[in-house]
Amino acid sequence: VLISYASLSEEQKESIDPLTYRPMLEEALNQDMIDTRFIRQILGLVTLVKTPELSEIVLDNLERLYPVADAVAKYLSIFTESDSSIRNQIGTRVLEYVLHPPLIDEFFAIWLLEPFVHDARWNHLIELRTILHGHPSRLVRRQAILALGESRDRSALLDVKSRIGGLQD
Image (cartoon, rainbow, N blue to C red; front, side, top):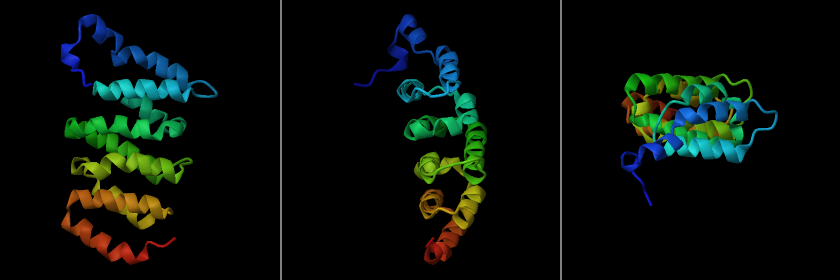
């Protein structure tokens, strides 16, 4: 059952206002052991109402959010509909993390690239090509190929074609 945010009463809107979740998310992320179920619920709610207010805290804590990688990817996908400058800033931060991680598992990198795979508006061809040419993981490079394919950029697709044979680890 889908419920429209506009159809909610003011009291209902207040109860799911993402700004009320910010201190709770910050506190949860400051714990030694994060409560993944709680964080997944918060990210799920703010994803449903498509509000970007928690983007900074999410991006600043990517290394702690690894256990909820799928929820992070779904949350990031709400920025597909955002203004291109906001989407560009978010995309740049995500790709910098994938390209220059303090410590990142390929599973998490694949999830972080998920929004780029599904919509060309993310449009970070240079960074995606850098991942294609230099990331140590074949699976992450495959995800970059899928994102480049979504872009439908002729030059990027020719680059992918030339690299297909060299994707062995």
